[in-house]
Structures are given as C-alpha cells and as structure tokens.
Image (cartoon, rainbow, N blue to C red; front, side, top):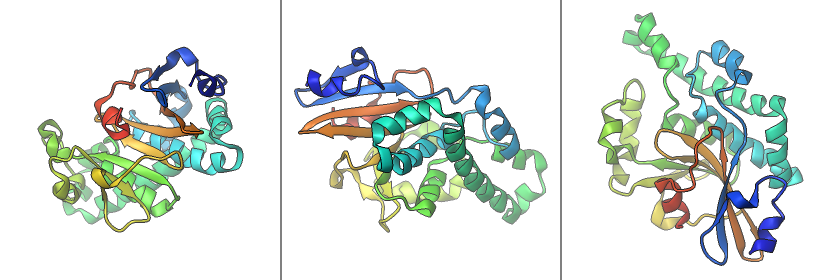
Amino acid sequence: MQQFLNQFKDIINVNDIIQKDENTAIGQIYLYNQFSDEFSDLIEKFTTTQSICGFTSVGNAIALKQVGSQIGYVQAIQHLKKNSQLRRKYVQDAMIYIQNCRRKYIQQSQWLSQNQKDANNYLKDWVANFEISDYLREKKFENIYFIRNVSWDHPELMDNIKYEEKDRIQEEIPFKGEIFFIDYGFTKQYIRKKDFEYSSQHVYVIDILGHFICSVVLEDKGKKLILLLETMENNRLNNQTIKQFFKI
C-alpha cells in the first residue's frame, strides 16, 4: 500500500493520509483558499455570497474532468493548485449560470421583484443543492456525480430554507430517512445510495452539510486513495457524510 501511495507524493504529504484497510486510504489536499482576494472581483461582479464553496466545488469537479481526461488527475490537481486563471475560469462559469437563474426567478416573483433588499439578499444567499444539480445537469459532463444530503432529515436546515429552495425541496421527499442520495446529469431520476457504488471513473461534488467539497478516487491494481480537494483549512477526513458515502 505504501508503494501505491508514494506515487502521489507530488500532490499530498503521505503523512496526511489515513489508511482505512489494506486496500483503501483517504487523504485531503488544501487546493486553494476560497476566501482569498483572488475571487473578490467575481463575488462583487456577480453579487454572490462570500462563502463560495458551492461554486468552487463544482468548478473544481468540472476542471478535473476536463483537464484530467487529457493529462491525468494528478497533473490536473497540480494545475488547479498553481493556476489562478484556470480555477477562476471554472468558478466564474458556475457563478454566471447560478446567478442568472436567480435573477430570472426574481423577475418572475412579484414579491422579490418589488423588494430590492430581499432580492439582493437572495442573490447573496448560499448556493443550494438544487442549483448545483441544475448546473451539472445543464453541463452534462459524464461521470460527475453530486452527493446530496437530504434536508428533510435535518430540521435545523429546514428552518432556514427560503426563496426558490422552498419549492424545490419537495424533490427530496422520497429520500427522507436515507441521509443522502445521488444526482447524475444523465439519469432522469435521482439515484438511491443503496443502488450506487463509488468508482475511480467518477468525480464527486459532495454536500457535507454547511460546505461543499470535490473528491476523486485514485486507483491502481485494487489499491484506492480517496482524495478530498478542500478550499478551506478544515480537516474533513472524519466527516460523517464522507465516511458514509465511501463506506469507510
């Protein structure tokens, strides 16, 4: 296992990896800082929330799929770490789509269209699960999956739901009690967790409650490294959603 993990030493310190069994390990990379001034102009331009993990996580996933398919995930991760222009490109694309959708909703809402303060608050609200789903379904990149927590299973979340999310949250009702479900842009229906197995062919955007993160699985000859790509200085290796999804 150590020989397998050593091949990733250019992107992650082996001391930051936790081995779960003889064939599986999990590690986390601090990809870049989502709160840095690097994104300040985009936040202002598109009137977004300051907590942009909804945009960065999905942007990272699409970047890994597009760039990684050409040069491999390891080099793609290195490019994302070093290349501000590259990551800004993908974050901006997500911002444009989601914020345009919000503006359309505001225009169609008689109440919001007549209340500038509330409309502005909506534009600056955190990205919702359904918005990431809509964006990924619009983009339709093969093998990018979104792991969505079920808001109905978390009363503290339901108390704060507003705007369009109040309508769209009905989509999650069939999954009450199942903790999370999986959304994939090429399937008409959402996927139940019991019907899904993670794969090194996939790139994941994961809702870990209060934060979104991107993840990939690097595999060789049956050995697997589950890699979390973080944009905050928080350790997510023991996050419950992560552990339940990857069954570790």
